[in-house]
Amino acid sequence: MEKTAIIPGSFDPITNGHLDVVARSAKLFDKVYVAVLNNNSKSPLFSAEERVELIKRVTGDFQNVYVESFSGLLVDFAKSKSASFIIKGLRAVSDFEYECQMALANKNLEGDIETLFMTSSPNYSYLSSSIVKELARHHAPLENLVPNEIIQDIYNKY
Image (tube, rainbow, N blue to C red; front, side):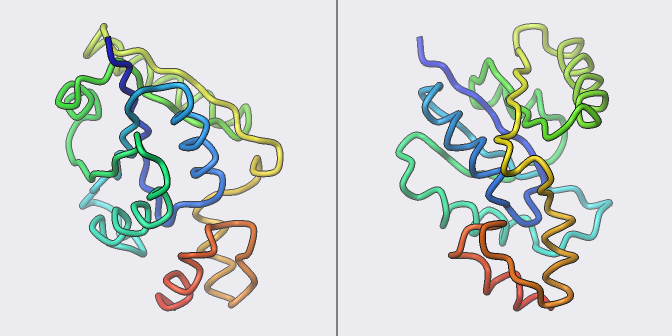
């Protein structure tokens, strides 16, 4: 049976920490969907379509990674892809409380889908899309924080 996982997030923009979780997940699962949340109640820097394209650009070397946007419930998206696993990256203990609540809510909605937590690689434990956006706003260097292929895209937004 094929093992399929979903890595959900806003990815606004994708960071090297996100990409690390994708790369590690791609080694563990037959199919990995990077699920870009299209949340109309937020004002992201990049549209959902732009985020999907940026992620496709930096994950193109992975044969088993697919990138799509979704709205609505994550478990519904997971079921539509026949995924049995949701992968959530954790940078610090502070991430765990929220992610644990979400995992339990998802388990309540769809008992057959397991949430797995993947700890961040130490060199990315501080990294977030918010930090990247703040640095870019002030034209600070983004090397080693995001994939080189998308640095100019980020700067162009400012």
